[in-house]
Amino acid sequence: MFTIAPKRRPVRVVVALAVGAAASLALAGCSGDDPAAMLSTKDRPSALAGVTNVHQVSQLTGPKSPNSTGRFEVAGQDLGSMFQADGKTWFVFGDTFGQRDPGMTGGGGTEWRSNTMAYTTDADPADGIHLDGYIVDEQGWAKELISSKKVDEVEMTTIPTYGFAANGAMYLDYMSVRHWGDPGEWETNYAGLAKSTDHGQTWKKLASPRWGGNSNFVQVSVTKVGDELYFWGVTHGRFGPVKLMKVAEKDVEKQSAYRYFSGTKSDGTPQWSANVADAKVVADGTVGELSVVWNDYLQRWLMTYTDGAGAGAVISDSARPWGPWSTPKTLVSSTDVPGLYAPFMLPQYTANGGRTIYFTLSKWGPYNVFWYRADLKKK
Image 1 (cartoon, helix red, strand yellow):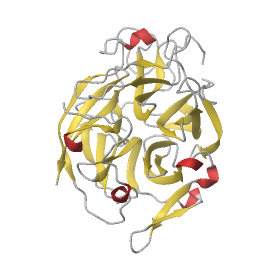
Image 2: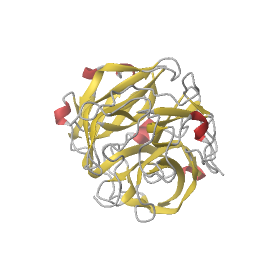
Image 3: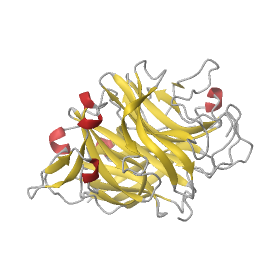
Image 4: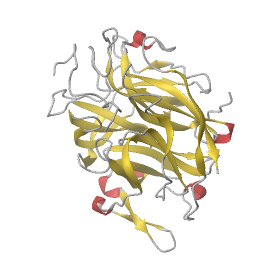
């Protein structure tokens, strides 16, 4: 796979604690969300012609970022998917390191935590995001939320792929990574949910629901539509297509309650199966670290992801959650930003009625998260 550096390379990690203008953020939700439009069965053509004015707004994490995350013992971390709960926006990060040698590139360092989470009430994404703080331990360090064994070929780490709020609790969908392999590839044991009922301070891994390490729901993006949660999923690594499942919010912890998109009827009505083996591909491609949101400007769903074939961060649209999705267009080129990955959106971080979108983007070299913006071009 080119040039996109792996999310992390096989283990050259030094571990000290374990061996081995314009925006309007509605923290209560996006007021423009219309379940009838979001779940339309009409097969409408793509509305996205491309993107313009794409550029980095600021650096989100790292000691030299405006957030000076070294005060939370964060020198390097990646990912940064977002969700809303408790009147805050939460940023969820992957492997986090407290100290890194000068000039070090890629994942690694000391004071390794498999995952951490920051929060903000910043409602204006135009000038970057001010992080109010992290969930911290007794030392004031950003705290590991979901434990991992940190043993290669057993459980190297546990990486949250998306978070969401449901039934008054907070959830993180995470993957148990057995081994980091070649660029863009990794092996996983399973994917599951961790739950917090104390505003993110402590987390419990749920025994169910879980999906196998080779399933198509190892990495997910989650959106609430009406009283249901929709999960777009891909397998481990960055070389598979997207499939779709849903569940009633009230049943989010019941494995048997999940339904998998299994195709459409002649009139475009979606069909759902209780059997994960019946799940159909909704978007083909070499997809990793995906993010799916509803966009009011286009009145379409938007999907961004890391292209495992080397194109960088790409974007596509669809009138329906189950597609068809448009041919992906470049959002940020890997030529312009080598080693980029994980372009995550939040529907509330938009401007100009949704025409301007903001998103996080990880860079492998500095191993930190950056804040980007782009204008959507409508057909």
